[in-house]
Each structure stands twice: as C-alpha cells, then as structure tokens.
Length: 176
Image (cartoon, rainbow, N blue to C red; front, top):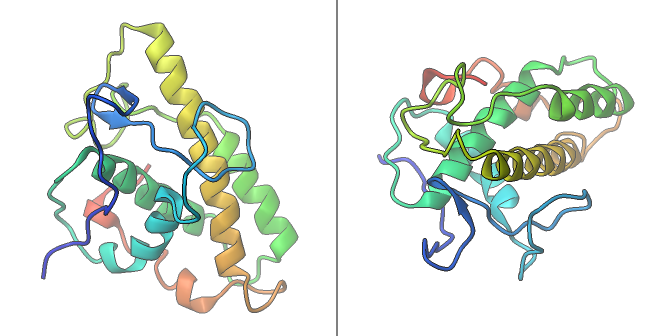
C-alpha cells in the first residue's frame, strides 16, 4: 500500500518557492509571510488528516513540492506528540507546544536538519532563508494550535489516547 501524498497542485512557475520548498497559503491566526488560503482546507489540515496513516510508512516518494511541506508537517506533529503526556492538561499543552513552535529550530537545508537530502534551499541567500524561517515558524504555530484542537476535542483535562498512541511511531524513521 503506498503512502498518502498531498492533493494540493503546485505550479513551480507561479507559486512562491524557496529552493524546492513551496510556501503554501495558510488559514492562519498568526502573523507571517504566508498568503491567506482560498478555501477552508489548507496544507495544515491535510497534515493533520494524513498524519496517522502516513506515520506507518518508512519510505515516502515525493511526487510534488507540496509533499515536502507535508513531510515537514508530519515530522513536526511527531515532535509535538512527544512533548505531551497522558496527564497533560489543555493549558499545559498550549504552553508546551507554543514554546516548541517558537523554539530555535533547524531549517531545511541547514546542518543538523534530518532530511537535507530531500530539501534543497539556497543557504547563501539570506533573504530567502529569512522568508523560509518566518514561514516555517508561522506554519509550526498554526499546526500546533490546530493539533491541540483535535487532541483535546473530547476533554480539556486529558489528551486523546488515540493521538498519543502515535508518539512512538517515527515517520520515515526520522524526527525533528
């Protein structure tokens, strides 16, 4: 059975890209360089929808530039779930994931990033790298908040055990 890929069509000539990482539109409450999305369903919703199914795969063939954003989103969700415990309340989780989203993080293409073979970004172009860093920070903040909405949908006291069951799973055997 093949892995699930992103359904967003990307045109490399018209869409904003930094190297081969596409800056996709987001429905975000946070400030950043992402354009507003045209529909209610954006790449963050797709990351959340495909996370559990894709976390079982060790290999992932990239079929479009939007798959690279999907890979980053799935790896970040893994990282977020690793910071939550079954006894974590909603307020504690908001603090933990907000700090995680804003912490110093590795940008694709820089030394120390786990999947540099998949991403090629212009490290020498500081304007492009700042744009990418700001986009990823906005992406991480929005993804963390939407993940919390799904994990704590039933109860604000305890996270969903069906989400926390995936804390030990590693997508592509990698983590951020």
